[in-house]
Length: 120
Image (tube, rainbow, N blue to C red; front, side, top):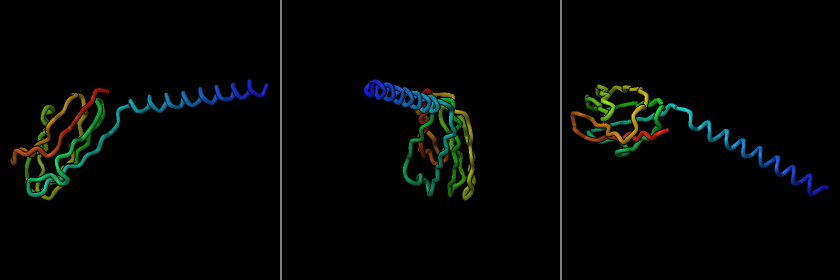
């Protein structure tokens, strides 16, 4: 009798754990807001060239800062953001296209970051 109760209890506990795990894994597939920062000083990205990761359907927010006036260009999305030296600028867009995209400071023809958008 005791063994049967323990078995039922363990079965019940296992079912609860499985449902909790399924709920957590389902919630991670919802679109999220991804926040990134690119700071360029004297033509070089602070911290080196980074790779930013997002999933298709996510909202991407990139904060740009630089000590030279220029245009940041996200290739593949054809988004250009003009940033005045010493000022911060924010660009927000929906990550619709999957792939690996170069983010370049156009005037210097320098890659400052990569954006990787994975399928959801």
